[in-house]
Length: 74
Image (cartoon, rainbow, N blue to C red):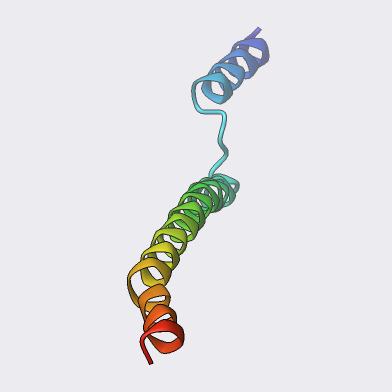
């Protein structure tokens, strides 16, 4: 009966804390990788939006007037 109680306590501990000490580092790394991947995707989308806005503004306010003045006012 004593062995059964020990096993039940062991099962209860695993239910309360499903992460073994050995696997704790792997879980942390997996969490860090998933967070980094999500942040990386978000940063990439923000970078693409930034480049699009920057390119549009540069073309509109710098290159278009330069081409206009070169070809029509020169």
